Amino acid sequence: MKSLLLASFKDIAKALPQTVEAQSVPAFKVFNLRDSSKTLFVALMALQNRNCNHILFAGTENEAEALRNDVFFYQNILDGSDTSNTPVFLPEQGDIDSTGIRLRNILELKKGRMFIGSMDAFLSPTWRPEDLSLSILKLEKGMTIRREGLAERLQSIGYRQVPLVSEKGELSERGWVFDLYPSNMDRPIRLEFFGDELDEIKTFEIDTQRSDSQLNEAEVLPAIEKEGSPLISSFDGETFCYFTETIRGQVSTFDTSPDLCQMLRPDPFFITLHSLPMEGETEASTSSLSGLGLLHSERKDIYGLAEVLKRLDEKVVFVLSSESQAKRINEVLRDGGVVAPLVSMDDIGGYSGKYSITVGVLSGGLHIPGLIILTEKEIFGRRPLLKPHKVSRVKKLLETIEDLKAGDYVVHREHGMGRFAGLEPLHASAYKGEAMVIEYADSEIGRAHV
Image 1 (cartoon, rainbow, N blue to C red):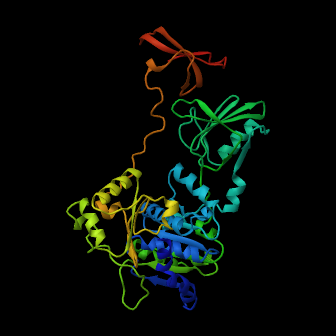
Image 2 (image 1 turned 90 degrees about the vertical axis):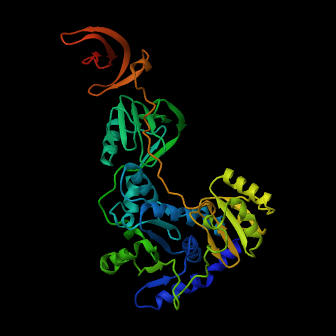
Image 3 (image 1 turned 45 degrees about the vertical axis):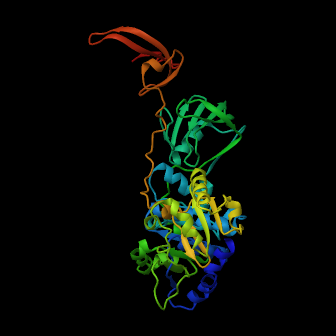
């Protein structure tokens, strides 16, 4: 499989830089990039030009994420030994989760790596990598740091104080304890001080607020993006810019704005990727998957796959998103007289058998000389891509008074963190019944009835 993938666009990939340099306008077009072959092409270009920057522009954030997964799939097969150059998905500016991903990935800018995102993702102003590096707060167990200075530093890089930490970008201070949810971490951390010495660094669960794992150190990135230069200006050196068909109109952004072109120096190579063939132009050697009887719409049911495969001369690889799906296809093909073993992603590139199945993430198949790749899209038909509904991380927090026990910590909107002491009768002019009693260490507050 690997040799067939490497040979597919080898001539185009080798000739492209020389062809671009010979033109007055650094633009190039490649046609007939059907299905997922466009991501195979850019993966080969990155492999061929390791000392250059590579930026793949997509029309939408969802498309960019799918393209990133596809490029990763092909890079893993073509050059699986080099994990340092895995493609990077860059989301658009938005919520705190996007901020954390963007800032974490800005620190990964280096030549030879593929960055994938929408036009907005790259043109939005943000930190320069060198400035961002200086803004990182590095925490180590045993270090000395003023607690007042820590709170001020965190607030200066976008963290907001709240009574109870439940989302990224939040900070809670309770005497000798700081709770913090860094934008770049998957879990919040708890900093416990002994005077000005950082005595413990622990992660904790949002639903129970209980600490668990110990850490020796932690790096905290800002929770906001700086109003600086567009991210694209941070790429230094020769840069290949690839544009999918979905943003053909946006490519003119560079044509009409010389300032943007000047951000990429020396002159970048602009490469537009087209799925349709164009006679007389540079075309990739791909063929359509339709008309072979492999597609969902061309078969009566899935059990007809085996007979179709027997009529084909090409090597066929099935890429399925789960092991259960892979095993099911393996059984269906075996019942039809076709042996297609399950092969791991690490070994699929070198597997020499005619039929094989592997577990991976690929948005669509392809058909190049000697090789057919099929995914769930071709086997089962197109399915709508639905983003999972984001459920609040605090959904398991206490919801009723019956869940509280004497001694539990609770947070009052005005007075902050206190200890639940139980229920007491309360008789007032407008109310007669029970009230929660919360005790505070602050003598001025003492006990509050709620």
